[in-house]
Image (cartoon, rainbow, N blue to C red; front, side, top):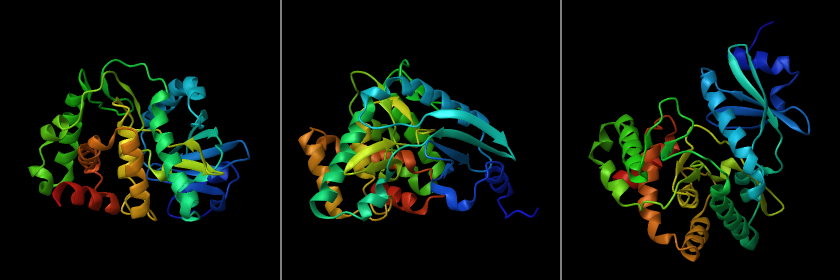
Length: 290
């Protein structure tokens, strides 16, 4: 049988009796296909280290014990499926559609309500229990782990900026870290809770997805702060200035507005190494370099 260029993906789909039309969504890490009404197949990109998938599965297994604390569903891995040079997982199918799609169909008060629901969900992520000492990465193969959060902020920013290219050499990671507060305690931080990683239905956020390699134990305030930053058209196509204004008002109402600009700058440093994502990298340059 002749396969298209991505032969591993084609073989994986064939083994489950799926066609490309079954795809529900995709991102930088994986493509997700509907198996039935209760399950999906998540096929990771070619070259994904199986140990990375194992770390994500372990993280989700730890978090799923506290999923009743949050008003939305989170992924649950049912099985891991190696084969055809690819790694895949069978997971529970979650309710709703990508928030980016739902926002595109919304206007006026309904859209404003969705943006507020998005920020509410980002703020609730902290209620997922992650019992780890200190601060740092929870899914990376070479994690940065520190006793203080500011130490983590500086080291992670420095590592990303070093990989971002010579233009970023003038950005001081220590200054970025000093501009943010030291939390009283650590909490689980998704750190990639942008509209494409949330599902919505009936005006409510029904699920948060794509828990993975960028997740950390850190300051819980980073999720709503970064969620606001991600409402840039360079990161979330279709996002508007009005969406950003609604999010800024939400931050003000919750006493987070004073932290927004330093958090936005650190988030830009964090993602600066993502040179293969043109829109995201352009946003990082605009925030840090002007």
